[in-house]
Length: 620
Image 1 (spheres, rainbow, N blue to C red):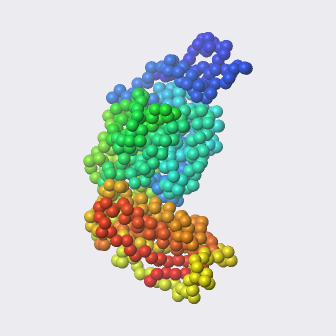
Image 2: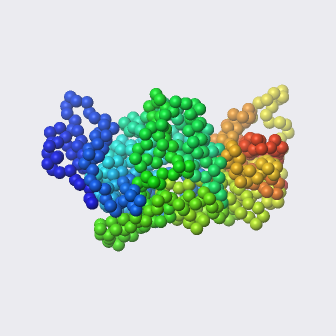
């Protein structure tokens, strides 16, 4: 049944001080001498009117379990302006040909049909929706649909401050911003791009323009950002934010590892230790979030319990992917191409039948996904093997274990660092970790067996005296002002001998502190950038690239570490590479010391360096 429009008579009754918006909801006309309504007041008034004049819900959007689907998520693009470690390689992924993506008119045609049948909330997603050139126009045209109460967007926030004033005028009413850390260096490590301050600027611009609450989505990952829970919560003291902590779905190649997941109850306990007065708020109908508030704070906290307490029973969501597929369950692998039906000339009634049949097949809960909690799917090859597994595009739905779970384009998917997956070789399983993906990357175990012997590129000229002391033997920094700028590259290595017990826990990613390889990798990258602050006579170097690999060597019960640094300047970067390798080794020790103190750090050495007046070096 189509949504009932507001009658002309009702509009005439509302005539004198009101004008009608496209949905039929009254919008107050500003009168001279009276203060104008804020955007929030206007949106609230519109929603209240639509609630009072809502039509009966469409049968074809109601599934066999009585769930009424009133919320549609539309992916506007597969593209993204970030390269998150858990999502894609640094060079990006192959994209669907433009001709196979939904056009703007096709998006609006489908949106119009869904809204006519009962959808009252649409959220625009990606990829990153704000990089689509016509996103403002799409919002404006959606705003004209009668019966649509809410137009939201989920964004990484990079372009938000610039576009939000236009989006608000077009009719955008809700904002979700993804932000997994409040530490700028960690942000840059996770997304492989700068932009932390742009995201924060976007959050404050949303507050300035009257959006309340501004939702901030934070996926909590043990060993990476669970130590920031209190910092995120503290943001709500003075800002009207809804900080939403999302349970991470930790898939480590061939087994589920709950120790990497920080559960809702654990997060709640951590917060209550700091704020024991934390109070629970009433849950909204069909909400995926459990909401809490710290008394006296402006904002609130929410928890998305997708792992520990699923919310399938009240699910009211549907999704359309950027290439036009309808997904009735975000965790399912069943899809119907609405694009193909549209382009084949299907009538509105035929589209209703196709959509209704898909909704009717929706299961009570995402059983295929939950089965993964009991079954271990086959291992996925490591992207750091000698023949690297390359992600061919999220749209290709990488499936495993008889398609029991799926990654899909533009949607919520298990945010697992693909970098931490397993490689099963004939001899033993090995975990690999790298801070960077490169087309020519070919890391190997740093054991004596795995490495080919290095060959020297020529004799290294030696200095007649120490360079960091003056003529009187006092410490002094070398003056590099007269040296030419050249491309400098250095590679260093280290080995951590763990012993069998600690090695097994690292190999299976079962350490109580979390993923030792992931944390050590991050520490190595950060340390390289801070070398001049740690070693007094080192010059500050503007690094153009830092790369850290960690691999397990089962024959020695060891972690092999290799660090590479690159810069263009008058001085070398071997100290940065050595610092990165040493700090990564120290971090592995710190992560494992509760298991064993019989851990040995060694073999910290420079493997190679290029550039500079003294020539190149390659360790034999």
